[in-house]
Structures are given as structure tokens and as C-alpha cells.
Image 1: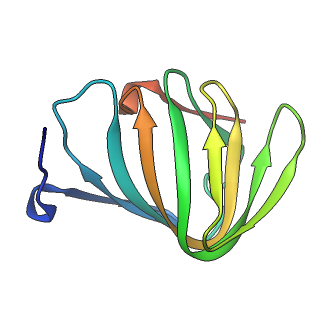
Image 2: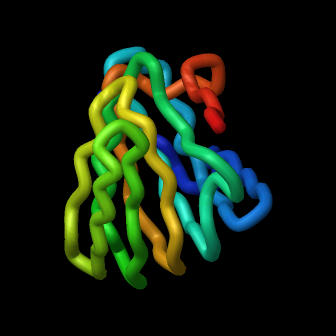
Image 3: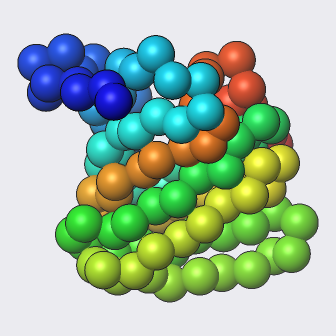
Length: 114
């Protein structure tokens, strides 16, 4: 078992997004809470080359765009989105989500694409 107190969480922010990462020693899974308040990324798409992300929408709503299928998914509070590894996506909206990733997310596997 591993217990992570909120005081150990690491806050980050950027242009239109912010989050709280809960540091874990487990390489198989990790957890964050993210907030999006505009398009993310501002241009293009993003991809995780090694992990799946599961988003539970805590509050708010938005739209997810996929690059490969040109899909547009509208989501609301209470919805769940599963993003597979190597899936190119972007968000637009104003929402907060709980996000476990498996295997654990790292910044090295996160890429931005045009």
C-alpha cells in the first residue's frame, strides 16, 4: 500500500491548464487532478506514447478532439474518457478531471504534435 498526502502533491500550470500530481513510487500507475479552462494544447494535439489515461470528469464540460479519426466528443460532469497510448487528442472546455494513468505517466512520454 502507498498513501500520498495532499501536502506531498506537486502543483503545475501552463497556458489554459493546471494540475496536481500525486507522486508515487509505483511505476505501474499514478494519479493527478487536472483543470482545463481553454483549448489544450493551444494548437495541434498531444499524445502519450506509453500510458493509457482515464479521465473522470469531476465538474464542468468540454470537447475532446482526436487527430487520427477526426472525432469530436462532447463530455460533461460524471462522464469517463479512456485515452489509449499513442492516441492524438486535444481538449477544449472548462472542466476538472481525476486522471489515473497506467503505466505511470512521465513527461518524457508526453509529446505535442502539429
